[in-house]
Length: 300
Image (cartoon, rainbow, N blue to C red; front, side, top):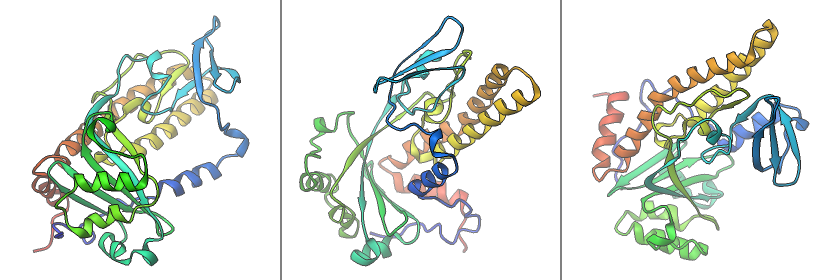
């Protein structure tokens, strides 16, 4: 395994990453606990005669709301009420796993990854590893495969079988990189990569709107998905609050918000698609290296 590009010393490197678990904790702790209802999986939604929307949950509870925000991800149950767009499978799947207690138990892996993230690419495959908090590493094995991993011979029935299957996919790769697989914790989970069409827009429907992946699902290779979702949420909250404070039509404010977020997401979505194609190409090292050098010129 040879280091091709190091972004650590790049002069314009101002894109810090945050551990998703810690981010979720910070956000959850910022609102009163009673504001969040856990274990409420949406079963059905329909509009009442007066225009409000009734939600029915799988636990039997239901409620009526003036505004329903579809923040329910790739397979949103709200999106079909405003859009006919369906997520499209990219042809690639991440197999996610983790490595615990890395600094103490796996110092060689800790040294390989350092304080941030590494990409190991080639032959339309990749190994991506990111340091999280508490000496935990999150790892993704990126592979071309059909939507059903079982059809590709990827056996995730047990940790031992999963490791053997992944190692067969990466035969010939450096032992330093294969150590990421050997050292994984006792779980692995497939994450097929889907995206909505670039430039996705939807018809404005009174009392409904979307944000995050429900609105502009894209591959993770753009690095903007969570950033866009958080900005969507902030913009929507401010738009509704400002309209109510001013005595204006908050429905019109929601429609204006939708135009803004759709326009804003178009360029990142195109970049995410380009990033996926470049990162998972057979000549991924050359294409990604050219991209990184154009954004982070190295000193002579």
